[in-house]
Image 1 (tube, one colour):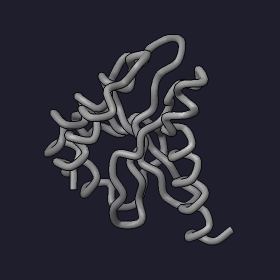
Image 2 (cartoon, helix red, strand yellow):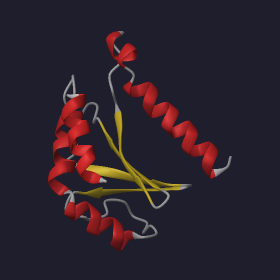
Image 3 (cartoon, one colour):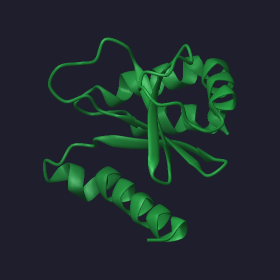
Length: 122
């Protein structure tokens, strides 16, 4: 599968998860594409069941992924490309990311509040 095909599938899946019709039928939003930059996707997910100790986001590349807390610390074992750039971006956007993370943990996330924060991440 090419990078473009993978991006299309990922974007389609995230749109499906966030679709208002799906939510009305009882399907709960589980992921939010926060930002896409430099061939990376930054995603915040709803933590089902036990909440993790630290708020964090997932950085996804083709074939690689890593989790970072909002202080820029990598929570996964393997280093990833552009880690210094990722860390700097996360630290600079910490407050916006925290608002999105907190909304995502709710049973009914406020899409308007999430979108407002996302505009600050660009």
